[in-house]
Image (tube, rainbow, N blue to C red; front, side):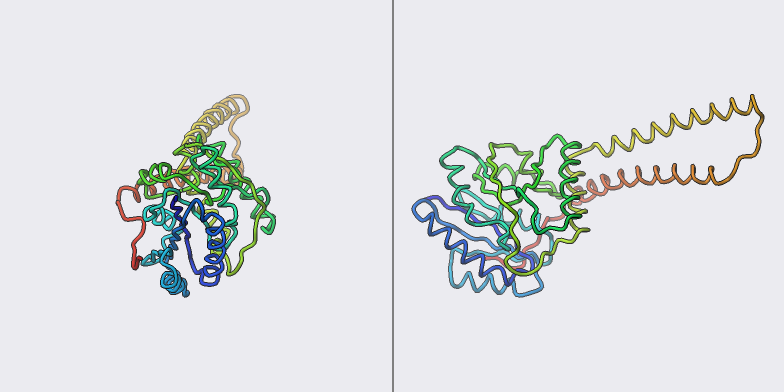
Length: 309
């Protein structure tokens, strides 16, 4: 019998957890001839009764394990903790709100065992239920990052996937502090099969992902898997240098031919503001990369565990 570890990041998900647990049990019964499950709930510093629900589920069913952080460290830390604590021959990462349909685990398992893939991952074929603005920026993010990075990230890719132990160990061998798992999953390679499904609404509760947090997460991904923004800063600086030379030449010729009448200040103010804005923009890009290096060199743990079963 194969052991499948189900890693479930949770942040304020007290309402969703019992529903998720019941759905996973249904899937385990369908797969009882081939696999057993262990369920690892990772409480990412929740402020509701998420931890207590995990305790209760553990008392009722010993295949349920849980990890509780000392504070909120983010979903990336929660996924990493679950992967590190998992013992299964295969490991799945699943959202507790049932936006990742547990029923797909059956086909995902067959894709690895029968078809020889190392990973079966999921992607959303539609963004039904999302606002048009959020969908627009999400599509633009995948378009931009795939142009800037050599690591391809599939449009609509979810963290929901089933992986072999070999692939999980490869992911865990990457010790970087600033983690962007969608990029890491792609970077380590291995044969991956993609399953598409339509977007599913949350079964309960509210999402903790705001537009701003998603924007910062997207920025994290671009910085983690591309140095192109640094090249853009250099190109902008060189382009402004060439324009400055052309402008100086123009002023010299103009002065020699027509004299030097006093120009207006508005044009000069606009030019100074433009150049200053470009300089601050390029300095900001350098600052983002420098801040990531700073965080890496401090060697702080990615998460701290307060309670664990």
